[in-house]
Image 1 (tube, one colour):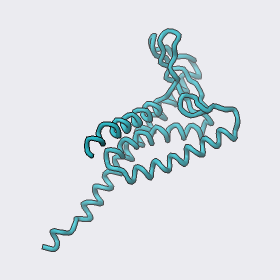
Image 2: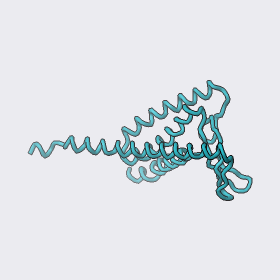
Image 3: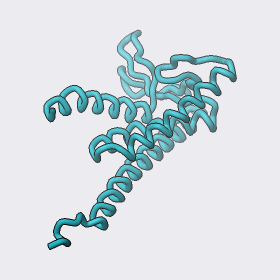
Image 4: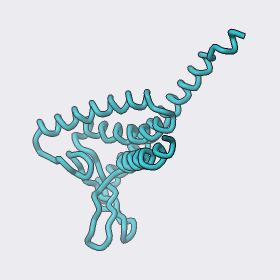
Length: 171
């Protein structure tokens, strides 16, 4: 009877490791999808310049030294390196949050982490993030972005939705 009351530690560890494995796969997939898209666009843009898709979207390489949407762009090495260091700290915090979250939240944070690691890699290797997706209508152009930005935005929006609508219903 005493055996029935004790939780199965091996079962708990296998679920815990499964959650981590899934999140690692999500982060890795997003990172490499982002890397692949950026390498392709960089190679295409060297030869062709602007790639016209249709009247609403083009691929045009823009090197972003700031954060999202080109905010805080600067020619100063001190500003750039400070922002990069802050982003590195945020990535570490994000990993710690993932380790302590529920499985659903781990997945959402993994979307953000995968994209953020892709952009962080570019900051370290290229000293700028290659953005290339240009959505526009006539003369109005949205901020140029990349695949990593899509996953970061999608993850943040899903987290907000979760906090605003799903968690409130549980309390």
